[in-house]
Image (tube, rainbow, N blue to C red; front, top):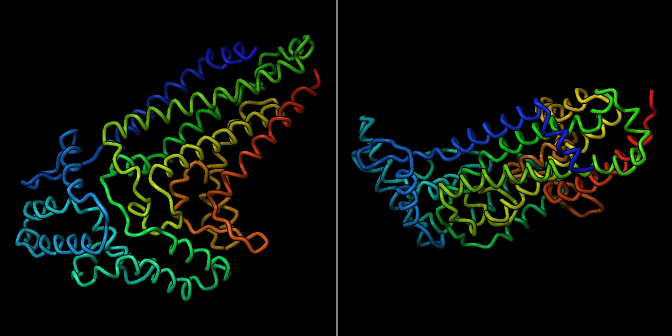
Amino acid sequence: MTRYELKKVFFRTGNKIALFVLLAMTGIVCFFACSVPYTDADGVTRGGPWAVASLRADQKKWEGILDEDRIRQVIAENKRITDSPEYLSEDVTKNNIAYSWGQGIMEIRELLNRAFAEGFRDYNYYRANGLEEADAPQFYGNRIMLLEEWLRDEAADTFSEEEKAYLIHQYESLETPLYYDYMKGWSQLFEFAPTIVMITMLVLGYLVSGIFSGEFTCKSDGIFFTSLYGRNRAVLAKIKAGFLIVTIIYFAVMLVYTGITVGYLGAGGWKCPIQINQWKSLYNITVGQEYLLILAGGYMGCLFISFLCMLVSAKAKSAVTAVVIPFVLIFIPSFIANINNPLVNKILGLLPDQLLQVGVALNYFMLYTVNGKVFSAVPVLLTLYPALTLAFIPGIYYTYRRRQII
């Protein structure tokens, strides 16, 4: 029965077109994710495998522990570049030559901009240019100091005392000095992950929306519900088919996307803490663990929204009504986000669209306090939505099996 339901889904012309669109969009996203430029010694920016290999070679020279000595070296190297005639020249080509010298320390230089910012929410691309080697000892201490100042002043009324203590504790719990390595493959993968996950979810919503409405569309519901197993095994077969469609297609797309992006750009840096790429994040995890969270969050988001589509389809007997659900859940939050209200923000932080962009959610200070205990948003999302998805199964089953024949 399950095989028959799967055949009905994949043999429909509209669904074949949807799968082709998904395949094409996956290729396009992979292309953009793998497009990494590199400026050579002549100031010419190039792309392709040579550019990737050159950038990796430059950044691997700085691999290691970001201790005080290494920070001093980076500051000294940056100062050497910014004091050079090429950097100070008004000739664009000479500026590009100077830029090419700093590609190896580019990621660490970005950390300097953030660590020595004038305020927690401030950012100045040229801040690192004004640093001296004597500033190196404050590199990690500034991260905590800027947070504490922000919580005392600008965010004084945003968080409770328990939440402020939680944030400070998370910052202080980060093991320092950090380990740095070339990780362009992962940073590019994370940047485009929300796009590929959302595209996949929209296609999955379209595919599963007709599973429970197909009999009504074809006017075969009378035969379906009067058959021997029409109101039990056949309904379970539809639910199982929806689960298999979501699981197989989602992981196939994500594995292809991961394999191409990381395979082309390199898998190095997966042991680095995410603060190398997300300096302000309160989550003390590695890049590899972030990838697993993104993979799990995207899967749970696709599963939840797809099962919701199936429930609506079973209830409304319409694929058109069901297929609107994914678009609503993705685009409505972007309009509500303009409302600057703490309660609205907390609600937005728990909507299913956050599961589709876990990598972005790791940058947010979205906290929830229950009985004096503080929880961050990502663990809450990954606990809440599996339970809600499981709750949909009996809802779909009993809604559809009790359908009356008209």
